[in-house]
Length: 162
Image 1 (cartoon, rainbow, N blue to C red):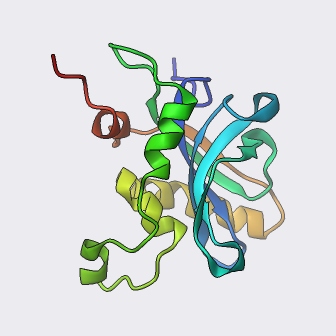
Image 2 (cartoon, helix red, strand yellow):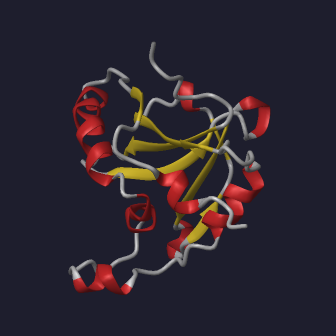
């Protein structure tokens, strides 16, 4: 039996096609947004100023959504983290290109640079790219699955020391 991807304690990564061959990258907390939607946790740049955004997103009915991958759960053996705790942690990520990215030749800060801290880039691109082609053709297509490679929650919420 497969693990549910959009349960209310999940932390998911999602890629949306921009219809130009690129993706918008975000994290989300299913069920934590308004009216039972997901709370999206991502960065946007309206008016060319990057800012963290935590608005609601209907993941089940988005026409540009290409893939959703469960990367963790807010529930650990010790406790369940609230959506606000996850949001506050992600809001602390600096909205600038890190030095190691500059060393790799990445000059511009983007939602992908912000997202890259989750170590999921290759898995999500592999899943989203074929779906984006179907979206370009007018057929919404999305993959929902649990990550087989990421232990994001362990990195971000280590077990408390006693």
